[in-house]
Image (cartoon, rainbow, N blue to C red; front, side, top):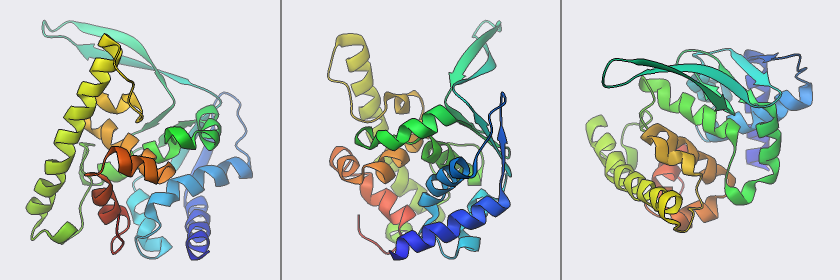
Length: 234
């Protein structure tokens, strides 16, 4: 009950500070905004007062909500220097120093996907947390004394010592599943595309289905507990 009251207070302040914009004619209702706010604030629950906690999200104001999938025009340069243009289908996107984009269809569908451990809102706001110390790299700013570490450098070393092998093992599992017919992983395979995506999908799973996540990733659950819930055990 205490956590529910804190989450309501966080979400209320979040709603005061952020501006929702519907794309393609979508009208963002109060109920839709509240649903997004509650999920966005869940990772902040144990980080002090609502005002203190919401400083993690103070680099942006806008939240753009699309009715369904969004299509972004991308470009890449290959080794020969040739520029390639392509379209990428998105369910959400967090821009460094900019707004968050969400697909309402994906947000609404996540209410029924706890078993899969998915939440597009938590995913995108985990990226925002990761970006608090620069471009997303899969390691958010760690607090002083994180898991008994003596310095910021030691804290990051501790983090990477757990996350790098877990990512490589997960990436291998996804490759075996996709190319050779192996068992599909429980965690969203999108996490195998890059360390920042692995962190984001891990955060989704941690908050949506913590018991399963701890079973699948016993070395990462204590780190996320220490980060998101200082003072509590994993």
